[in-house]
Each structure stands twice: as C-alpha cells, then as structure tokens.
Amino acid sequence: MPVYKFTDGRKGYYFQFYFNKKKIKKERWNGRHMDSKVEAQQAEFECKKQLEKDFGAREDITLLALFDEFCKTAKGNLKDSTLYRTYESFRKIYLPMIENKKIRKLNPNDFLNWKNEIKKLNISVEHKNRLINIMKSCLNYGVTMYNLPGNLQYALMEKIKEHNVIAIENEKDEYIPSQDFEKLCQPLLDYQTKENNFFYYYIVLNILYYTGIRIGELAAITVEDFKDNYLVINKNYMRIKNKDYIQSPKNANSIRKLTLDTQTSNLLSKYIEIYKPKNIMFKLKGNYLNQQKLRRIMRQLGEDTKLGEIYDLHPHSLRHSHASNLRKLGYDEFVISKRLGNTPKVSATTYIHSEFSEQLDLAKKLR
Image (cartoon, rainbow, N blue to C red; front, side, top):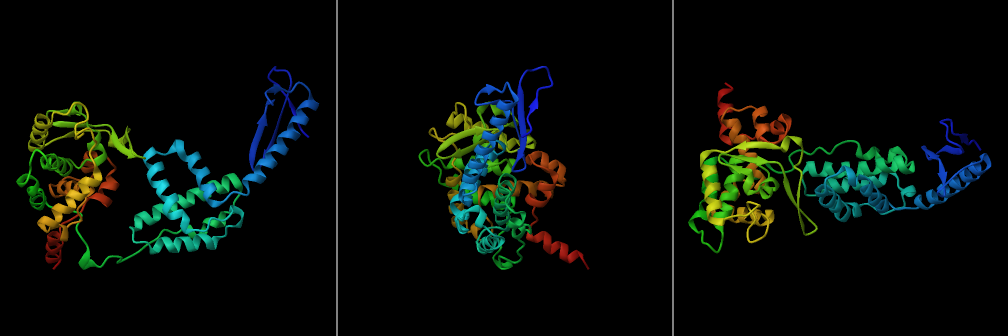
C-alpha cells in the first residue's frame, strides 16, 4: 500500500487515497504522528476498514435520513427562515408523499409519481417548482455523497407548466388602485378606539402600501430608522419556532434608504406621538407585528367593503400595488427595483401589474 514521506522537512510519513470519489489524506492517525513506513501502512489499512464500515452503515439510510443529512449540510448556506420554514414544511408535508425507501432501492418512477402528486396540489406553479428544486438539491447531495445514480433526478428536470388553472372570470387582481385602498382602510378610521388599536393597523397598512416594503422589514424597523422624511431599511424580522429574530435583510439590494411622501411621514410621526415606541417601532404591547393577524384584518376589511370580491387581499399585495403605482407614474423598473430592494427583472416580471381599464384602453387603440 502506498504511503508517503514528508518532503517539507518534517519527519515521518502520511498516507492518502481515494474513497467513494473523495480524496482521503491523513498526516496523523489516532492522534499520533506516523514515524515509520510500516506504521503508516497499518494506519492506512485501519482507516480504509473504518471507512468501509461507516459507508456500509450509511448506505442503508432512508430517503428521510438523506434529507435530514442534506439539511444539516445546507444549514450554513441558508437563512434560518428558509431552513426552518421552507425545508421543515417540505419534510413534514411533501416528503411523506413519496415512499420512505432505503436510498439504494429508489428508482426514477418513485420521483415521477411524487412529481405527479405535487402537480395535483392546489398551490401555485411557483411553489410546486420550488418543492421540486428542493428534492433535486437533496438528490444532488445523494449523488455526491453516496454515488446515487443521476437518472433518479430525470423526472424532476422539467419544470411544471400549467395554464388556465384558475378560470379567468374568477381571477382576482393583485393591484389595488389608491382610491380602492383608501376605501378598504376607511373602516379602521371609522371604528377606531383605544382598545381595538385599529389606528395602529391603519398606519401599518398605509406604510406598506405607500412604501412597498416587505412586512418583515417593517416589523424590524426601529424608532432610530425613521429620520424626518425617510426610513432606513437594513434588517428583517422573522419568527421561527415561536422565537423572534432580527436578521440581515433578504439580499444586498434590500439595504436601502427610502424617501417618504409627506403624508406617510406625518402618519409615522403621529404614530410615535400616540404609541410612544421605545425601540422597535411597531411592537404592540410587547409583541412584534403579527403578519397572520394583519392578514385576517385585511380579509375582514375585504368582506366589509366588498373589495375582497375584486382584489387578492393580503399584506404582500400592497407591495405589488406600490410597484404598479410607480409604473403608472412613469418610473421604469430600475427606479422601482431600487425602491423595492430587488432587481429590475424581479420588479418587471413579478411586482408590476396593470389595471383592467388599461387593458380595455389598449384594445381600443389597436385599430
């Protein structure tokens, strides 16, 4: 068995070899230097035996165990929010849709059947493809670490494409024009009391609509981040496993200084005067801004004003609406992306929507 003598002036030997397509190199064995060639050869023999034993045990793992191992490896490269929300929901909800076989007994049909089950789910096409990408990443890990055959992923390579999933007549608009947004929020002003904190939610909705910031960014804003007529956006709030975290924003583009219109700036000043926040701006009675409660309030407002029959009402739709308003004002996707904290491509393809009246006007001008 080949072993090698140090050539850099050090005394003793080391060994190296390839195992499962990975280079193994040891300069010490069991915490000790290898002073002789025979000692190094014996250490190499023991090392190979140990690797074969461990690999044999690992070969017996199931798909679920493979996924758990993959998540541990991915932990350093993923945000906690992605790991604990996206990946945990995948593990609990979508991974059980495929039989938990030992990895050596998996075949391409297992993944084809799983993909077909994902296709049937009543979730967006984007979400379906996100789930498929997670499974592909897990299998890529299996190919690298366990020499799984690459054809297992073949059924997952093509993205899901669906058309007319929702009938056109039932489609709701993501873009809420300003006049309808004001109508949507009016009940919060009409029925506000000190006890129900409707004014708190009125201001929250207005800031989301007139700045386009993400709800996690809003929840993380401190009093010091508000400077007269602008907001500093440099952090994001997440709640993971019933614990609150303030972390870095979604990406480098998300760090920005956001100029406010006069009315929004005045609303924020009034909010500070009434609620007197100490540090985190929108903590209410010691609790961070609750996205689920805000979603329920928007749903109730949609029912009360009948606007829920027209618009897809949720906190993120206010971000879509802000981008669309900027487009109507004549700003291009480069300016809009700076304000939203993303890229021009994302702004143009995801956030900018047109009103139905614009579509009618366009049709009239064709001939």
